[in-house]
Length: 94
Image (tube, rainbow, N blue to C red; front, side):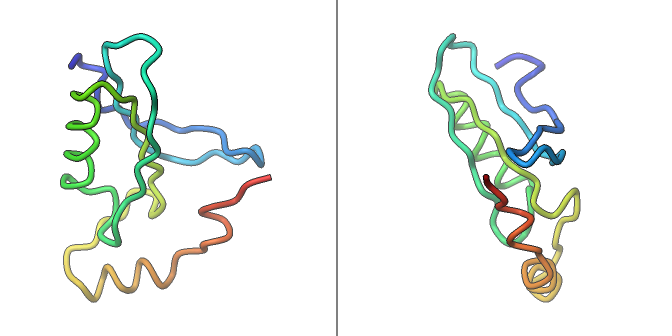
């Protein structure tokens, strides 16, 4: 994959709000794409590694960063981040 394979981006949600995320591109033109949802730890190295493997297999991948840059380092923090997540805002759709 190229240098653009793992980029932090901001994308526009259907409601017009901006949201952070990571995009993983593939060299294959017209490739199918996947939205990969983070686990309760956040958009950490493990979930980005899954996205890299999917991109290597020929898929474009978007990971919405639901915690907006925060990562959990232990179960208590992960539980706090997940239970504090504003789900209607995180999954808003028109």
